[in-house]
Image (cartoon, rainbow, N blue to C red; front, side, top):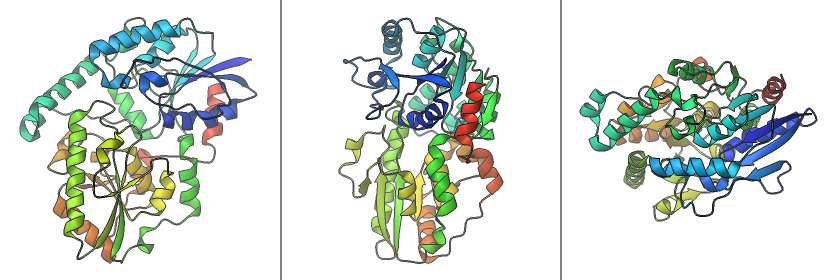
Length: 402
């Protein structure tokens, strides 16, 4: 019987892989590989039904992505040694091609390499002139510019056996046989980046099944909740800190403080219930003392959206989810922050961008009074976010078997 190995890194990867693994049962033998200590992600479900192995390391205090470059090199070497020789598999399925994933892919030769790419991949590059003109923290942004330039210059070398896992990389550097992506937009970004992926397939992602069913069965039209003096505003944080993006994390907290101040300023005109949903890979402790309600990230997002009048965030895929469902959704790019994201999906015109607190104030007042109207481009949204269809899991499983 044919054998398939899944190697997830976080909880969304598991959510996508499990339905596919269940669909494959009977046709193939399923195995999972975890590295929970390296990624600081406890993602093995209780009562997990498949055979698995977890590569452990007790002394790692932070995630692989938060340590220094030289520490990463030591961890990659250690992971490779701990992993040892792997059995033969007919296919290896990963959801990104970071250093540890490339170690696994390199150890299993003559197999089908498959990328199950959850999320939106964007072009987050910016020019040196942009830094000089717009940056408030030029030292940090120059370092970011250098890091991105280095990753781009070693894009192809990152896929080489033996040395590849020790080099910085961009997602899509590995020459996968197939890549299942969320949308045509993602495939286009990877192609422009020069990816060696042989075939792109766009069937949506299994984890969006509940979102798809809710969109078709429950009316989330915001106009039914507008024209009132009480608004529920959901602020979505991102795991910048987990990825060691310290400047973006600092901006995130500055933006949240401004929103809290705005809520206080508007209390005589509009009562706003501010809910902060902390990303599973963000630091919850940094939000304990804020003047807002903290939402448990284990609460299904679909349920959170159903109870929400407005969703605010930055460049998270979650913003596309809420916008797709019909909830007024805004990307906060305060203090001319858009210069850093203008080449990404945020800058392509699908989402409404808010660039000042005054603009946000007027939007909230318009939504509260029922005056707000959003003229959404459905074709542009479909090109960017093709979440799910009723054959998503079957189509992915069928193509894996092929």
